Length: 115
Length: 111
Image (cartoon, rainbow over all chains, first blue to last red; front, side):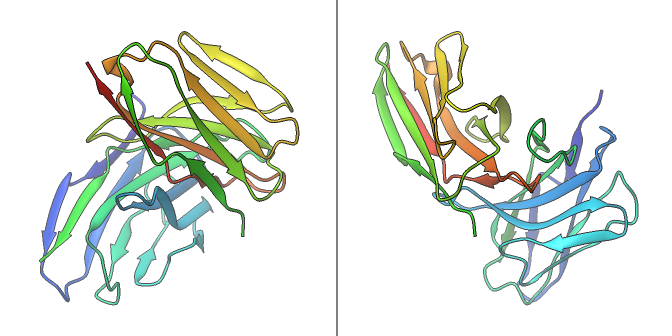
């Protein structure tokens, strides 16, 4: 089956700890994305990557970091600098086509709770 | 930056009734996409509109792209309990592959 996997589904961390969320895809997509979802605020883009070893900041990158060492993997680290990290995190991938056919495929998400 | 606004934020519908959710962009879009997120789930792609004035139908769902390619609507007829969830619109500009998502319309259905 082709798709995107995120693990774990639920994650609990103490305040002040860094935590890394995993995202793996076998769709052979070049572009990958990380979104944060809070109630009533839709999907806000954290980071995105079009090719291996390259990534760009999205709208709310502060307190987050990413890496793209392999095409299939795009892990997100939530650092202690992120002031309000408790949220639902969604990873997505797509073919980076400009203009059309750039629909995104989402993973099941990780719900992070910082205590 | 590009902003995509979506209204209403919440829609409470009696089963069998129709409703419409609207999406407006501050800039001209190259395409508009619609996604559905079931409670506890993740967004799933429904459809993409590319042409000015385009209308597409999926069973009871009708999607429309405005003539100026700045707005879109999703109309659901004869709402069913299976329509429960949050519907997002998302658009991209002509020189970009990234999507800007609206805040979503969360639909609940009264049986």
